[in-house]
Image 1 (cartoon, rainbow, N blue to C red):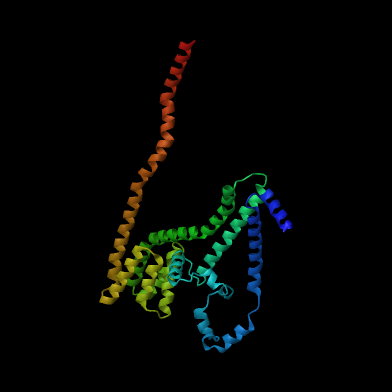
Image 2 (cartoon, rainbow, N blue to C red; image 1 turned 180 degrees about the vertical axis):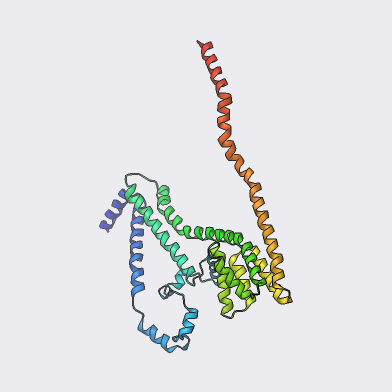
Length: 327
């Protein structure tokens, strides 16, 4: 007991009030870093393997079915309860947000939470290294030490979420910018005699160089239609994945055109014209906002030099007169 007290006093003397807590945290992190690779590399339990072979629900599936349901990382399956939200609604919302960011993998949610966990631990390690090694000669109070230790960990934990949010906004802007061109190209393909499925494939191919995000969405639609999914369901899923009101309206136009038997070419022509008008309106709106945004910068860069030029000589003369009168 006396030995533990001496260690506690030594840590408190060198690391401050939270010295023992920092050491325990470092040991816990090292234990986690050592345990995770061991859990990933350990062989499968023979009893679980026998139960899986006997259970008809978990028997090995045919090769074609494996291809249809493939794409998951088997090593991450062991940590599914830790890397996936247990609430189905929360899991669906996270999957939708990652798809809107362009990450279509089945393991996207798991990789996202793994990135949060790994970057959070890395930030904590950086904070501890800063407090114990880099700034060891500085004295911090308890609040400052907590900020310097937990701050990098919090930044690392929330960094993937911030990245996903920015990625979603950027992708929506790219889709909105390229959508009018895709409608014009689709209209040309339909009027040339191609079906809607063929026109979507051609548009996805032609847009790859200029608007890759929109091309990815059209490719997903084309593959799902080839797989035999319901066309209305495929189009609605595209509108949800994109998260852009223009795409959702386009999906509604196509579904209504197919439902009521109207010409798809005529519907595309009218809607493409509306999208071109909206693009012109967005450009005019951005141009009208530009003078307002430049006002502050213009004032900061022009008013101080102007005041120096106009008021400077007068102020210098007044100061000289004051000095002469005082003398």
